[in-house]
Image (cartoon, rainbow, N blue to C red):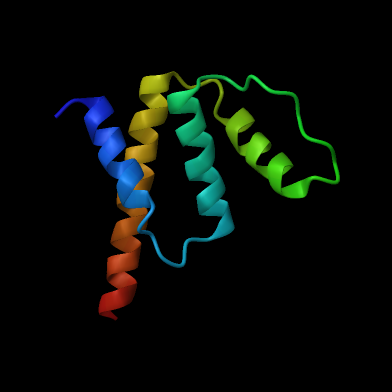
Length: 91
């Protein structure tokens, strides 16, 4: 399986995550945007639009990564979160 297919599979898997923290969701968002769009291509949202600004900052934080790096990091993060979820469910 190629990186793109593996990424798409894990993007679908990420939608099934339960009890994911906002920090982890922002990490996934930033990596997903970097993998699918590339470097940030929009201006920073205003200070009063906190949700969109947090998402923009998460994307901006990973803009130095190549699309392939972002895909790989995204896959790794989803695997980590699924493992944590499974461990919490079994305890």
